Length: 70
Image 1 (cartoon, helix red, strand yellow):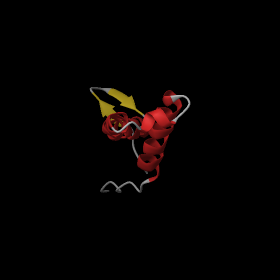
Image 2 (cartoon, rainbow, N blue to C red):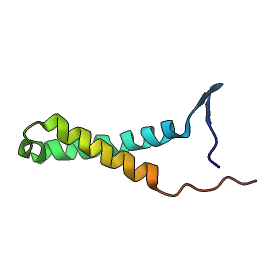
Image 3 (cartoon, rainbow, N blue to C red):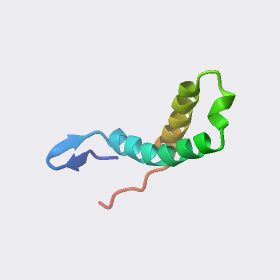
Image 4 (cartoon, rainbow, N blue to C red):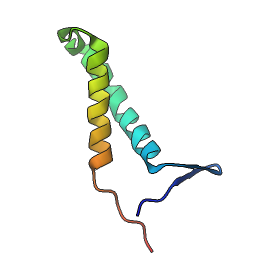
């Protein structure tokens, strides 16, 4: 079972950690896409960025998590 994250006495859902990791993965990928002009291929570049973040979040969220020691 995945337990809550304790951040200075505030308990957060485990999904918050997944969100933070996805954000760390997304930021360099977005910079690369902007650098190579991949965002210009889309009608609305913001939609492409949202899709890229959603893909990063799905990748992080659906990876198997290590089990905590009992």
